[in-house]
Length: 442
Image 1 (cartoon, rainbow, N blue to C red):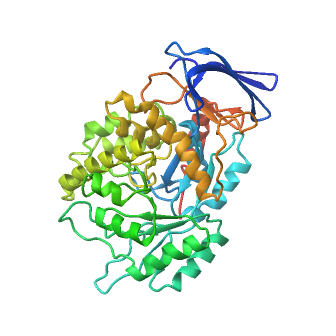
Image 2 (cartoon, rainbow, N blue to C red; image 1 turned 180 degrees about the horizontal axis):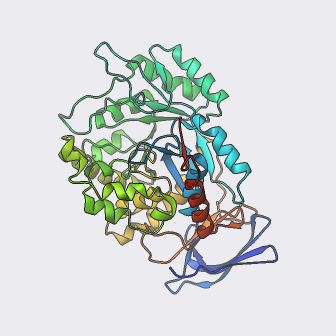
Image 3 (tube, rainbow, N blue to C red; image 1 turned 135 degrees about the horizontal axis):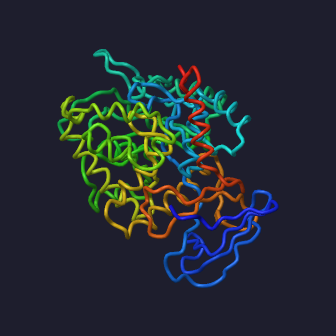
């Protein structure tokens, strides 16, 4: 990895001769940072080609800090999760449910950390449907984190009050029966039309941003007609056509390919995926030991290889269509099995880009500027000011020009503090060497 042009002397941090595509694509800049903020972004000439690029930090728009991503069903403690994100240049995280379970550990880690933590916004606990007479329950109940179950409209009031008391800033609504492709089995109950419409209306009236979790086009259309415009996943049961997109005008979708892919991966694919720089430095190495024993994809074992493979293909095509419309949010569903905090965010970018180098700048923009705008929106903050400007917090990544989207940034700076990846890796290793092995029990 080539060195980044970042220097720090006598309290002043400088970055020389970098492109800033989010500010002015054809120019080079010298950047100065003092007291944690940009004090100068000075044009110094035109791009020739091959110069490093400076972008805002990455924003993970769909994570679950309290869910077990590891193959042994263990949960990394919050201090490790925060450092995993920092290591990979992720500086803002949207937790989609369950964060209150680990909030105390996250805050304690922040107070004792020599590095700035990633910013985090969360919803408290998600809302979902009740269990029916056949024993099916609403999506979310199967995870080791509480959810609010809504049977009637009045149940929403308790959920909103409870989440607000726990620091929740937005509402996560689970509305899917779990089907992925036509003919695949129904796994979950869904909220009634009456309750879903009521939930969308009350959230809008109270100024609470609502994000809905759907799988299929039918579910997405229905949620859209009820008033939802933010979707936690892309549609996975068909590739949307122009008529579909017209019906869903203004809707935004989170990509989440990395959260679905582990079910269909072969041993060779796992080893290649976990072979990039950053995996052994930040993740539990026992995950690598486990996938070496995989005999066949889990999708074959559980009878969903074909449907999940098709679902991923539909999700990617729909994500790229949303990207070109400016309506894609880059997120991973990390915390789900095999989708790792920080590491899988770079995997997500690689899965979206594929072999199309022309997508790189657009994806980088949505993963940084677009994601940060969304993060602020969930926090109730709206601003049209550039993220990279004099007086703004100096939080950014420097990337090699033309490098793979799945590659680590050359450098990460958070609030003017350069992040030492070797020191982060050492800190994670020390946490994993404790009696708890760096794990928490929820």
